[in-house]
Image (cartoon, rainbow, N blue to C red; front, side, top):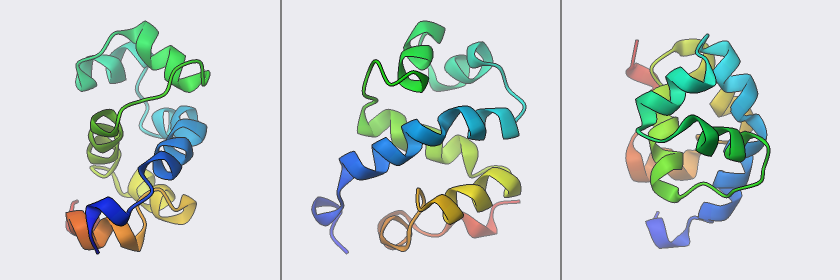
Length: 97
């Protein structure tokens, strides 16, 4: 699968809609997650309230952060955020403990 064939906007929208739930499952505040990502808390709030569209790099950063815990990784799989298409490009993070 070629990265250019992946509908990045679709994945960004899925992440955006589910960002508050994933963040809550990770037990981190907006400020803590924003710091992990290297962005401001207000930027993260704008993503969560769908007032701003995240970049693909931010999406990938969130995907990496959420893939570190089984619960959030599994939810991303169920929600289609970390789909088979992305696994083909980036590898399956299922082995992360």
